[in-house]
Length: 236
Image 1 (cartoon, one colour):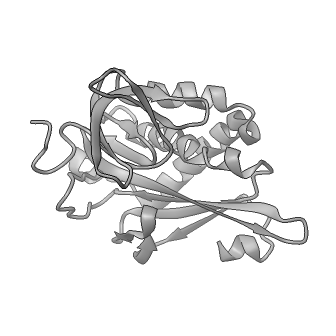
Image 2 (cartoon, helix red, strand yellow):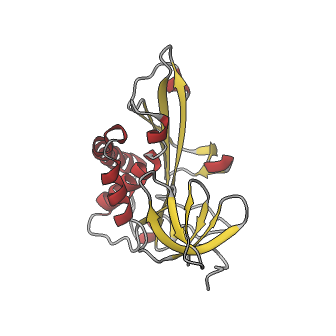
Image 3 (tube, helix red, strand yellow):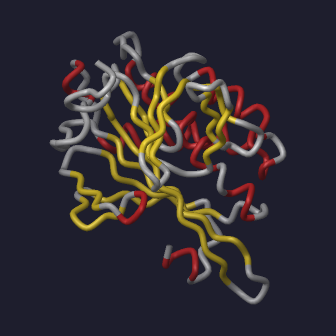
């Protein structure tokens, strides 16, 4: 973020070889070892803050496309996005995305940093959820090659997003890469978990979930758990 606040016009990619003091969503620790991709994209998107909040969905679409591109003919079973900012393979987390924003300069220009963490060579042990990495699927991909693929995909999808004007296309692409309607899930938005089924995302990028009474609930933030994703899975 400092580079953006200091006047960097972007887009600028930054990559670290090791990350030991990173921050994930809600201030959680984000640690990644050598051989994995930990990169950030600094940009001034030229859009309102409300539109910039949807960039996590843009990034998720791009990340799945980038992973498919480096995989080539190697199958990645169950490659998908999970709202709001995770990438999964076979219900195990292979990557995450973090969006940070601020304003800079005399005109209060919006600066956005999109952080990516993708498990290439190894995956952290998480007591709460399953994790995976590309090497575990027989793919040895160097971080630089992964970054090149990700940068190319982000360039394409940022153009389609068009400063928020093209979000309808992003929404459609994201839904194509997500789980099916009716999939069971649990959402915790800070007041305890609520169970229901996936009902899509709305035009603002918020999660829609149908509860046991048939009501459609809307979430602008929260932690989502899917069947098969957690250790000691509550859905079993």
